[in-house]
Length: 151
Image (cartoon, rainbow, N blue to C red; front, side, top):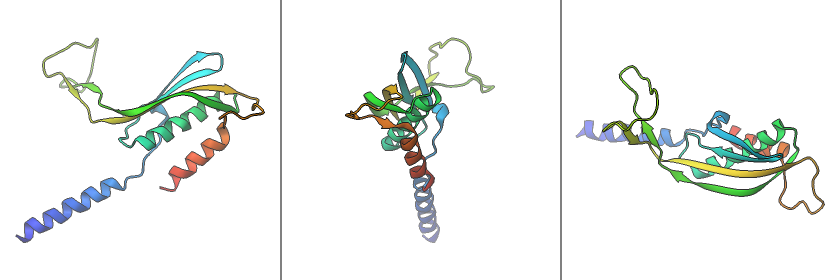
């Protein structure tokens, strides 16, 4: 009986410690595409199941995209977010996933659901007089980084 209680307690402690893991921003978990001269699509598809983290990390990447391309401000013109399951191909015996995707019975499986956020942004260097939902890229990046450094 004591072994059972101890194992339950250890399992509980393990699960709590997993829940306190602070989210990590990974800029390589995003896909950025230029849609126009100063319009970009930014999709964050990181390793998080927390939708708010994905939204924040996508917004942080939007800030970086604007700043990297020499813009000071941006406005989110379209936004999608959700939690998706992705198909994942199993590797071969040597750990490689090679060639063209081929459907092999038992070769594909659904991975754990992940939170995904995608924004289309319009970038500019001059802030319109009405501001119209424009975000200061440098200020917003600083705020988001500060939020996640505290965790």
